[in-house]
Amino acid sequence: RISRQLDEAEVDIAWQAGMDAVDLVKQRIARYSIRCDLTFGYLHAALHKRQMKGLDAWQAEWEARGYAHFTRLGDNSALAEHIGSDAYVGALHDTGCGHIQPLKYLHGLARAATLLGARIFEKAAVKKILRGPRKTLLIEGGASVNAPIVMLCGNAYLADVGLPEMRRRLAPVTSSILATRPLSDNMVKQILPTGAAVADENAALNYYRIDGRNRMIFGGRASYTNVDFGDVEPDLRRRMTDVFPLLANAETEQVWSGKVGITVNRIPHFGRTDDDVYFVQGFSGHGVALSGQSGAMMAKAVIGDASQFDVMSKLTHMPFPGGPLRTPALALGMAWFKLRDRLKL
Image 1 (cartoon, rainbow, N blue to C red):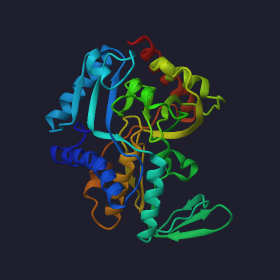
Image 2 (cartoon, helix red, strand yellow):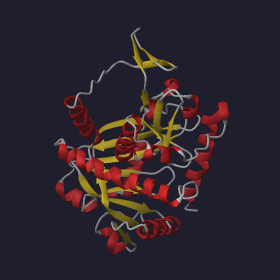
Image 3 (cartoon, rainbow, N blue to C red):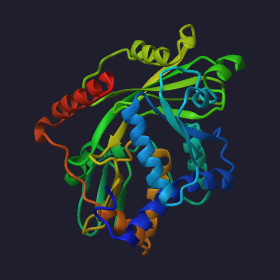
Image 4 (cartoon, rainbow, N blue to C red):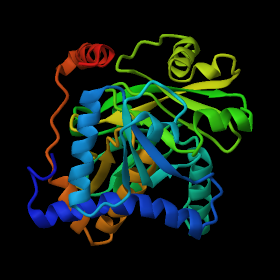
């Protein structure tokens, strides 16, 4: 998708930016002594042969570019070393990636930014941006801020503050997560013995990991509608126990939901306007690493080095179909993909 729109040198820049994203997370954790349970190992798990074929193609493409962290797990014994489940036919094990406790990481970044001179104003929601050479941000409660440059980094939470060209190209998707109470060491060894995080290859995927307290953190149940379906715990527990029947008696400690911003092509949407409003959005589930790297690229662009930012800005992003009926259209489209996944087509 990227190589069809960029020349060879630009593809190399985009590729390197993706590789640098993970390295930047590791560097920041080390530099600022952020304790966030960094654990390496990530499994992309296939539920049927078509998905495994897609993983094989992905592995071949990345290894052709020199990526050396993939191992194909194509039989039950290889899978069993990492996942105590019969749900999958194979997986790609990626030792170049991993997982962290994202809230601890966020707090660590906030502390580091403050020490470096940044000022963070919580509970100061921007309600409107008045555009022009010197922009005015109208703050909830009547305050205002004037600024020559604005960087919009709210992703799926910008709502009406975002630019029209941003809103048309982003779908806020609700994803929910369940955390169990801490599991025994023996149970953890049975279900995820190497501590790798896992995500399946379904369009509406399940993703999960064991955290630093031995809790199963199980996410999924993507919703493309604005409807509040109430208690999501029963559905998340069903998904979790479908993969791990051993967790049928595991107690739930907490359940929460949040929004993920996705684009049509699942590639982040970079852009800037003539009056110096910069934005990046649509990390499509990979925001822990990509948002940090995108922010660094945006910051470089603001101070004069836009080489990476401009390459990513060249990528075309189609608006989501449906216009005023976009949300129902998205929900209908995803219903088809979910059905296809369920039927393993």
